[in-house]
Length: 322
Image: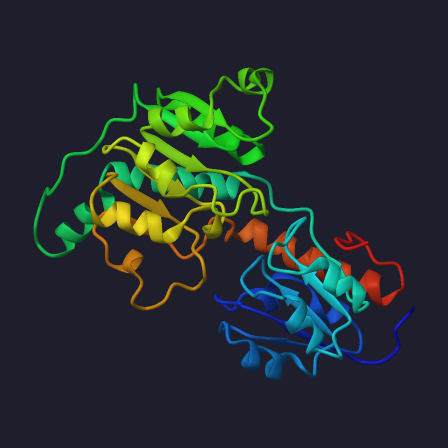
Protein backbone atom coordinates (compact mmCIF):
# COMPACT_ATOMS: atom_id res chain seq x y z
CA UNK A 1 0.00 0.00 0.00
CA UNK A 2 3.02 2.27 -0.44
CA UNK A 3 1.89 5.73 -1.46
CA UNK A 4 3.58 7.86 -4.13
CA UNK A 5 0.88 10.49 -4.64
CA UNK A 6 1.37 13.81 -2.90
CA UNK A 7 -0.70 13.80 0.28
CA UNK A 8 -2.84 16.57 1.69
CA UNK A 9 -3.04 16.67 5.48
CA UNK A 10 -5.54 18.64 7.58
CA UNK A 11 -4.33 19.38 11.10
CA UNK A 12 -7.46 20.29 13.06
CA UNK A 13 -8.20 22.42 16.11
CA UNK A 14 -4.70 23.83 16.48
CA UNK A 15 -6.06 26.43 18.91
CA UNK A 16 -2.69 27.80 20.03
CA UNK A 17 -1.04 27.68 16.59
CA UNK A 18 1.76 25.42 17.82
CA UNK A 19 1.31 22.24 15.77
CA UNK A 20 3.56 23.33 12.90
CA UNK A 21 6.51 23.79 15.25
CA UNK A 22 5.85 20.80 17.49
CA UNK A 23 7.02 18.18 14.96
CA UNK A 24 9.09 17.88 11.79
CA UNK A 25 6.37 17.91 9.15
CA UNK A 26 9.01 18.34 6.45
CA UNK A 27 9.90 14.67 6.94
CA UNK A 28 6.63 13.88 5.13
CA UNK A 29 8.05 14.30 1.63
CA UNK A 30 5.60 15.38 -1.08
CA UNK A 31 2.94 16.11 1.52
CA UNK A 32 1.19 19.37 2.26
CA UNK A 33 -0.06 20.04 5.77
CA UNK A 34 -2.67 22.74 6.42
CA UNK A 35 -3.11 23.88 10.02
CA UNK A 36 -6.55 25.04 11.16
CA UNK A 37 -6.70 27.10 14.35
CA UNK A 38 -10.48 27.43 14.48
CA UNK A 39 -13.01 24.76 15.44
CA UNK A 40 -15.80 23.72 13.08
CA UNK A 41 -18.70 21.91 14.73
CA UNK A 42 -21.26 22.08 11.92
CA UNK A 43 -21.11 18.85 9.89
CA UNK A 44 -21.75 20.51 6.53
CA UNK A 45 -19.01 23.06 7.09
CA UNK A 46 -16.62 20.41 8.38
CA UNK A 47 -17.18 18.16 5.38
CA UNK A 48 -16.70 21.07 2.98
CA UNK A 49 -13.40 21.90 4.68
CA UNK A 50 -12.08 18.33 4.71
CA UNK A 51 -13.22 17.11 1.28
CA UNK A 52 -9.84 17.72 -0.44
CA UNK A 53 -7.76 16.03 2.26
CA UNK A 54 -6.33 12.51 2.38
CA UNK A 55 -5.37 12.57 6.05
CA UNK A 56 -6.83 14.24 9.13
CA UNK A 57 -4.82 14.89 12.27
CA UNK A 58 -7.20 15.12 15.23
CA UNK A 59 -6.36 16.49 18.67
CA UNK A 60 -8.20 14.13 21.02
CA UNK A 61 -12.00 14.38 20.82
CA UNK A 62 -12.22 18.01 19.75
CA UNK A 63 -13.84 17.08 16.41
CA UNK A 64 -16.32 14.23 15.96
CA UNK A 65 -15.99 11.74 13.12
CA UNK A 66 -19.15 9.68 13.17
CA UNK A 67 -20.25 7.30 10.42
CA UNK A 68 -22.09 9.99 8.47
CA UNK A 69 -19.17 12.40 8.48
CA UNK A 70 -16.70 9.70 7.46
CA UNK A 71 -19.08 8.61 4.70
CA UNK A 72 -19.10 12.14 3.28
CA UNK A 73 -15.31 12.22 2.87
CA UNK A 74 -14.44 9.99 -0.11
CA UNK A 75 -10.80 11.12 -0.21
CA UNK A 76 -10.15 10.34 3.46
CA UNK A 77 -7.66 7.50 3.87
CA UNK A 78 -6.25 7.96 7.36
CA UNK A 79 -6.93 9.66 10.70
CA UNK A 80 -4.10 10.26 13.16
CA UNK A 81 -5.30 11.06 16.66
CA UNK A 82 -3.74 11.81 20.01
CA UNK A 83 -3.97 8.98 22.54
CA UNK A 84 -4.75 5.28 22.54
CA UNK A 85 -8.48 5.79 22.01
CA UNK A 86 -10.83 8.48 20.72
CA UNK A 87 -14.52 8.22 21.56
CA UNK A 88 -15.33 10.86 18.93
CA UNK A 89 -14.26 8.59 16.05
CA UNK A 90 -16.52 5.77 14.87
CA UNK A 91 -13.77 3.17 14.53
CA UNK A 92 -15.95 0.57 12.82
CA UNK A 93 -17.29 3.06 10.29
CA UNK A 94 -13.73 4.12 9.50
CA UNK A 95 -12.69 0.49 9.09
CA UNK A 96 -15.59 -0.22 6.73
CA UNK A 97 -14.50 2.70 4.57
CA UNK A 98 -10.88 1.53 4.60
CA UNK A 99 -9.77 4.48 6.72
CA UNK A 100 -6.89 3.60 9.05
CA UNK A 101 -7.00 5.26 12.48
CA UNK A 102 -3.67 5.48 14.31
CA UNK A 103 -3.03 6.88 17.77
CA UNK A 104 -0.15 7.85 20.03
CA UNK A 105 1.27 6.44 23.22
CA UNK A 106 -0.21 9.18 25.36
CA UNK A 107 1.50 11.82 27.44
CA UNK A 108 1.25 10.19 30.85
CA UNK A 109 -0.93 11.27 33.76
CA UNK A 110 1.11 14.10 35.23
CA UNK A 111 0.02 16.98 33.00
CA UNK A 112 -3.71 16.35 33.51
CA UNK A 113 -3.11 15.52 37.18
CA UNK A 114 -1.40 18.86 37.78
CA UNK A 115 -4.31 20.72 36.19
CA UNK A 116 -6.79 18.68 38.23
CA UNK A 117 -5.11 19.56 41.48
CA UNK A 118 -4.77 23.20 40.45
CA UNK A 119 -8.56 23.26 40.01
CA UNK A 120 -9.11 21.60 43.39
CA UNK A 121 -6.97 24.22 45.11
CA UNK A 122 -8.40 27.09 43.11
CA UNK A 123 -12.06 26.35 43.79
CA UNK A 124 -11.68 25.44 47.45
CA UNK A 125 -9.58 28.56 48.15
CA UNK A 126 -11.68 30.84 45.88
CA UNK A 127 -8.56 31.88 43.98
CA UNK A 128 -10.37 33.43 41.02
CA UNK A 129 -12.64 35.57 43.21
CA UNK A 130 -9.69 36.74 45.32
CA UNK A 131 -7.59 37.58 42.24
CA UNK A 132 -10.46 39.45 40.65
CA UNK A 133 -10.98 41.41 43.86
CA UNK A 134 -7.34 42.49 43.94
CA UNK A 135 -7.44 43.45 40.24
CA UNK A 136 -10.53 45.55 40.94
CA UNK A 137 -8.84 47.38 43.81
CA UNK A 138 -10.40 45.33 46.59
CA UNK A 139 -9.07 42.88 49.13
CA UNK A 140 -10.25 39.64 50.81
CA UNK A 141 -13.71 38.43 49.80
CA UNK A 142 -14.01 34.83 50.99
CA UNK A 143 -12.98 32.14 53.47
CA UNK A 144 -11.14 29.14 52.06
CA UNK A 145 -11.89 25.48 52.69
CA UNK A 146 -9.24 23.35 54.40
CA UNK A 147 -8.41 20.10 52.57
CA UNK A 148 -6.67 18.44 55.52
CA UNK A 149 -9.04 15.97 57.13
CA UNK A 150 -11.50 16.13 54.24
CA UNK A 151 -12.46 13.19 52.01
CA UNK A 152 -11.33 13.02 48.39
CA UNK A 153 -13.63 10.82 46.32
CA UNK A 154 -12.20 9.40 43.11
CA UNK A 155 -14.57 8.20 40.41
CA UNK A 156 -12.02 5.97 38.71
CA UNK A 157 -8.64 4.83 40.03
CA UNK A 158 -6.54 4.23 36.92
CA UNK A 159 -3.21 5.89 36.20
CA UNK A 160 -4.54 9.42 36.59
CA UNK A 161 -6.80 8.69 39.54
CA UNK A 162 -3.90 7.03 41.37
CA UNK A 163 -1.71 10.11 40.93
CA UNK A 164 -4.50 12.33 42.26
CA UNK A 165 -4.87 10.00 45.24
CA UNK A 166 -1.21 10.63 46.03
CA UNK A 167 -1.78 14.37 45.89
CA UNK A 168 -4.75 14.01 48.21
CA UNK A 169 -2.72 12.06 50.74
CA UNK A 170 0.04 14.69 50.58
CA UNK A 171 -2.56 17.32 51.50
CA UNK A 172 -3.80 15.28 54.45
CA UNK A 173 -7.01 14.01 52.84
CA UNK A 174 -8.73 10.64 53.24
CA UNK A 175 -9.07 9.00 49.83
CA UNK A 176 -11.93 6.77 48.71
CA UNK A 177 -12.70 5.45 45.23
CA UNK A 178 -15.18 3.55 43.12
CA UNK A 179 -15.35 2.24 39.57
CA UNK A 180 -17.02 -0.75 37.98
CA UNK A 181 -13.89 -2.89 38.07
CA UNK A 182 -12.11 -1.55 41.14
CA UNK A 183 -11.10 -4.13 43.74
CA UNK A 184 -10.28 -3.52 47.38
CA UNK A 185 -6.77 -4.90 46.77
CA UNK A 186 -6.03 -2.48 43.95
CA UNK A 187 -7.31 0.45 45.99
CA UNK A 188 -5.28 -0.55 49.05
CA UNK A 189 -2.14 -0.73 46.92
CA UNK A 190 -2.29 3.04 46.41
CA UNK A 191 -3.54 3.91 49.89
CA UNK A 192 -7.20 4.29 48.92
CA UNK A 193 -10.37 2.78 50.38
CA UNK A 194 -12.68 1.12 47.86
CA UNK A 195 -16.34 1.97 48.51
CA UNK A 196 -19.69 1.59 46.79
CA UNK A 197 -20.78 4.14 44.20
CA UNK A 198 -23.42 5.68 46.47
CA UNK A 199 -21.00 5.86 49.39
CA UNK A 200 -18.47 7.65 47.18
CA UNK A 201 -20.92 10.44 46.39
CA UNK A 202 -22.24 10.67 49.96
CA UNK A 203 -18.85 10.87 51.67
CA UNK A 204 -16.76 12.95 49.27
CA UNK A 205 -15.95 16.55 50.10
CA UNK A 206 -14.23 16.77 46.74
CA UNK A 207 -15.46 14.35 44.04
CA UNK A 208 -13.01 14.06 41.14
CA UNK A 209 -13.87 12.22 37.90
CA UNK A 210 -11.17 10.04 36.29
CA UNK A 211 -12.86 7.64 33.88
CA UNK A 212 -12.50 7.04 30.16
CA UNK A 213 -15.51 8.02 28.09
CA UNK A 214 -17.40 4.93 26.96
CA UNK A 215 -20.97 3.70 26.67
CA UNK A 216 -20.62 2.51 30.26
CA UNK A 217 -19.43 5.83 31.67
CA UNK A 218 -21.53 8.22 29.58
CA UNK A 219 -24.02 9.97 31.89
CA UNK A 220 -22.72 8.04 34.89
CA UNK A 221 -22.93 11.14 37.09
CA UNK A 222 -26.57 12.14 36.88
CA UNK A 223 -29.17 13.91 38.99
CA UNK A 224 -29.42 10.93 41.36
CA UNK A 225 -25.68 10.85 42.07
CA UNK A 226 -25.39 14.62 42.46
CA UNK A 227 -28.33 14.56 44.90
CA UNK A 228 -26.31 12.21 47.13
CA UNK A 229 -23.50 14.75 47.52
CA UNK A 230 -23.05 17.00 50.53
CA UNK A 231 -24.20 20.61 50.14
CA UNK A 232 -20.61 21.59 50.97
CA UNK A 233 -19.05 19.28 48.36
CA UNK A 234 -17.28 20.17 45.13
CA UNK A 235 -17.37 18.26 41.84
CA UNK A 236 -14.21 18.28 39.70
CA UNK A 237 -14.22 16.90 36.15
CA UNK A 238 -11.07 16.86 34.03
CA UNK A 239 -11.97 13.61 32.29
CA UNK A 240 -14.71 13.97 29.65
CA UNK A 241 -17.81 16.16 29.65
CA UNK A 242 -20.41 13.52 28.71
CA UNK A 243 -19.63 11.50 31.85
CA UNK A 244 -21.57 14.12 33.82
CA UNK A 245 -25.17 15.04 33.03
CA UNK A 246 -24.66 18.76 32.35
CA UNK A 247 -28.31 19.72 32.81
CA UNK A 248 -28.42 18.02 36.21
CA UNK A 249 -25.19 19.69 37.27
CA UNK A 250 -26.35 23.13 36.16
CA UNK A 251 -29.56 22.70 38.17
CA UNK A 252 -27.62 21.63 41.26
CA UNK A 253 -25.24 24.56 40.97
CA UNK A 254 -27.99 27.11 40.36
CA UNK A 255 -29.87 25.90 43.44
CA UNK A 256 -26.64 25.65 45.49
CA UNK A 257 -27.38 21.96 46.03
CA UNK A 258 -23.59 21.51 46.01
CA UNK A 259 -20.95 24.11 46.81
CA UNK A 260 -19.40 24.29 43.37
CA UNK A 261 -17.78 22.62 40.39
CA UNK A 262 -14.37 22.91 38.74
CA UNK A 263 -14.58 21.78 35.12
CA UNK A 264 -12.07 21.38 32.32
CA UNK A 265 -14.33 19.34 30.01
CA UNK A 266 -17.78 19.90 28.54
CA UNK A 267 -20.37 18.48 26.17
CA UNK A 268 -20.13 19.82 23.54
CA UNK A 269 -16.90 21.77 23.22
CA UNK A 270 -16.21 24.63 22.92
CA UNK A 271 -18.84 25.91 25.34
CA UNK A 272 -21.68 27.93 23.86
CA UNK A 273 -21.32 31.64 24.53
CA UNK A 274 -24.44 31.71 26.70
CA UNK A 275 -23.74 28.49 28.61
CA UNK A 276 -24.37 28.81 32.38
CA UNK A 277 -20.90 27.42 33.11
CA UNK A 278 -19.48 30.67 31.76
CA UNK A 279 -21.30 32.80 34.32
CA UNK A 280 -22.30 30.77 37.39
CA UNK A 281 -20.38 32.17 40.38
CA UNK A 282 -19.77 28.71 41.87
CA UNK A 283 -18.20 27.29 38.68
CA UNK A 284 -14.51 27.41 37.80
CA UNK A 285 -14.19 26.53 34.10
CA UNK A 286 -11.06 26.03 32.03
CA UNK A 287 -11.08 25.25 28.27
CA UNK A 288 -10.00 21.56 28.25
CA UNK A 289 -6.32 22.22 28.90
CA UNK A 290 -5.49 19.25 31.13
CA UNK A 291 -3.21 17.70 28.53
CA UNK A 292 -2.16 20.98 26.89
CA UNK A 293 1.51 21.05 27.91
CA UNK A 294 4.73 21.48 25.96
CA UNK A 295 5.91 17.91 26.47
CA UNK A 296 2.55 16.34 25.66
CA UNK A 297 2.12 18.33 22.46
CA UNK A 298 5.67 17.69 21.26
CA UNK A 299 5.31 13.95 21.79
CA UNK A 300 1.80 13.78 20.33
CA UNK A 301 2.49 15.61 17.08
CA UNK A 302 5.83 13.83 16.63
CA UNK A 303 4.14 10.45 16.98
CA UNK A 304 1.31 11.40 14.64
CA UNK A 305 3.90 12.30 12.00
CA UNK A 306 5.43 8.87 12.61
CA UNK A 307 1.98 7.32 12.18
CA UNK A 308 1.56 9.01 8.81
CA UNK A 309 5.04 7.98 7.66
CA UNK A 310 4.39 4.35 8.64
CA UNK A 311 0.98 4.28 6.96
CA UNK A 312 2.43 5.79 3.81
CA UNK A 313 5.12 3.09 3.78
CA UNK A 314 2.42 0.42 3.92
CA UNK A 315 3.07 -0.66 7.51
CA UNK A 316 0.70 1.29 9.77
CA UNK A 317 1.60 1.52 13.46
CA UNK A 318 -0.44 2.16 16.62
CA UNK A 319 -3.61 1.23 14.73
CA UNK A 320 -6.81 1.75 16.74
CA UNK A 321 -9.22 0.06 14.30
CA UNK A 322 -7.35 -3.09 13.15
